[in-house]
Every structure is written in structure tokens, then in C-alpha cells.
Amino acid sequence: MIGLLERFFPPRPPLLRDAVAADMPHLAAIHGRAFARGWGTDEFERLLSDRAVRAHVATLGTRRPPVGFILSHVVPPEAEVLTVAVVTDRRRRGIGRALVSHHLARLAAEGVSTSFLEVEEGNLAARTLYEHLGYREVGRRRGYYAGGADALLLRRDF
Image (tube, rainbow, N blue to C red):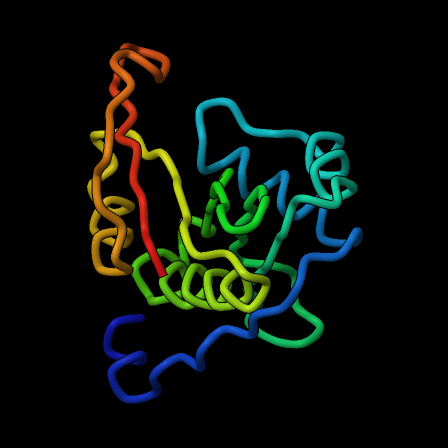
């Protein structure tokens, strides 16, 4: 039914903005559902208080809570994406792509020319997204994730 509704009434693109303190509980909840070891509100508060961290969120309306977010540690001309997540029931609808694209454009405006990230080798959805956005594999960390999964190191030059 949702697919039929979206066919005739396509969803609006997400609103993209800087993360603010009021977003922290939502980011922690999204992260906790997206990853085996989710970060708590205190970790997000600590990260957002760091002058080198940039964070953006996606919402479905001006007064709606975030449905996705991205954080990077920035030391121009490089940045490292620390985490990206979208709520489960909103995945595969372009929110992640819009969010990462917005984030990278904002970083480029600050003088960043290279972005790095790592992704679990088995996370095909994320790998596909990053490949479409121009990231390329430049290394591997064997057994990095719980359970022994490898981390792929990706790089994108702007």
C-alpha cells in the first residue's frame, strides 16, 4: 500500500539542516537502532561540543524530529565521516543520499577536499550509496567489527 501511495504521491525531499542540542536524544535513538553498539545521548553531546565536528540532520518537516543524520570530524583539507544513520522505516528513499550530499557540499565550502569513511564490508546498502557518491576503496581493516567483519576504508576527493 505504501508503495502505491508513493507512486502517486511521491514523498517530499527531506529538510536538511545543522544538528542542534535538541536533536541529541533523537540521534542517539536512531543510532541505537542502526548499530550493534549505539552511541548514547552523552556521546552525541560530547561530539557536538567539539569544534572540529560537523553534524547535519534530515527531517520530514520543520517541526519534526530527525529521521537521519551524519557526523564528520573535520581538519581541512580532510574530513572523516564518523557515522551516518537513517531510521529503519525511511531507508532506501533517498534520505541518506540527500543527507550525505548536503553534508559533503557544506564541508567543501569549508575547504575540505578529501573525505574518508569506513564501512562494514557486508553492508551492501551503505557501500552502494557511498560508491554512487564517488567514494572508492583505499584500504581494509581485517576483523575490525564485532564478529570479525572487515572494515573497508573509503575515500572521496572533491
